[in-house]
Image 1 (cartoon, rainbow, N blue to C red):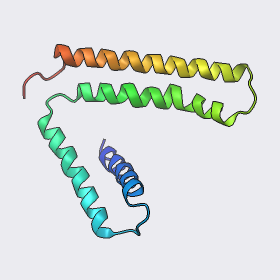
Image 2: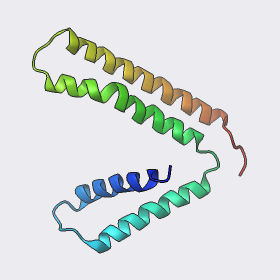
Image 3: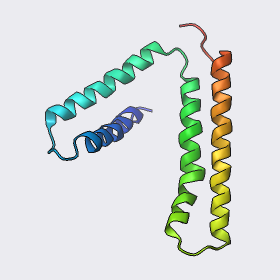
Image 4: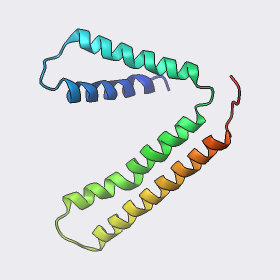
Length: 122
């Protein structure tokens, strides 16, 4: 748990650097500003949110399904030139992952609308 925030901040900071400042050289001040902004925004969200269960459910519903069921067979389909039964099985796995992701997001959204969760008051 201790390394989760630094790892995610590293990835987010690198993506922002590549997207917005890909043509510029490394700047330590920009690095410090982006890191500080990420840490402060994460701290602000954690101070304002009483129950992170819904957030974890939404992140898990999207990223876990994508990483487990959608992206590996999608890469297989992209890298394979010939169509065999394995390619069709990969399409079935992709479809299954999209369905599971949709159901999980809908259930988490319904839980959020109903106000269910561990901590109701801060």
